Length: 220
Ligand code: HEC
Image (cartoon, rainbow, N blue to C red):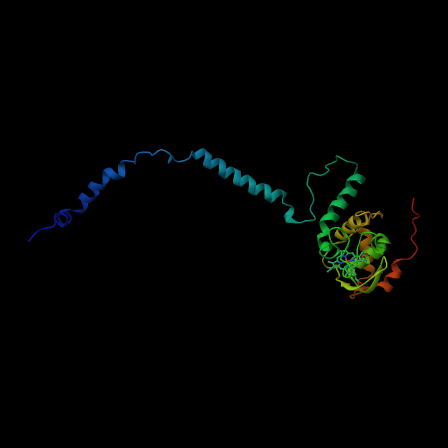
């Protein structure tokens, strides 16, 4: 009968021997190999610091990812107050226009037969109260713009947008694509919002005449 030398070895080896056998292996580190050096610990710290700084930066300057928050360093007293305010309204308005552009298109031209144009529209450039009323409650039924009839429904934006957002978007609409009408103030929108608070339904074109009353300001 032949004995397997390996089995003999295992049978004759006590636990302490196993430890002794492994000690040198545990003690000796493998020879370093070219291309497998660990990276500097300082580099690890540097990346950690960068990631931490990035997190802080996003927390501090992301503006809650809200489209209505504009560049936090925009003015800081650089421009006269009135001038800074006007351009901020246009900036805010351009961003708030994402709510309108699916229908009225980024170019303000609308879609023939479906969505009326805002460029050159008397409703967009006429009395600010009327424009605000349209955005607040929406509009439905036949509507003639530039000889073309639209008969569709615009949804209300009363609960979707603040007075500031509506004022800004109307200011943008009234001063883009060749339109040249005065800015709309949040107070104008607030007034119309309060006066029409009871009304749930969208306007029809005829009803909007109440907002088309005398335009006091003669054009300069
Ligand atoms: C879901 C599509 C839709 C959205 C979103 C929408 N509109 Fe309209 N809008 C319409 C339709 C449709 C009409 C015409 C309603 C009718 O036929 O009576 C209209 C009419 C108008 C009018 C009067 C007609 C004209 O062309 O001047 C104005 C002003 C207007 N919208 C402004 C806005 C503004 C500002 C926004 C964004 C806050 C907006 N709309 C968002 C569909 C939309």
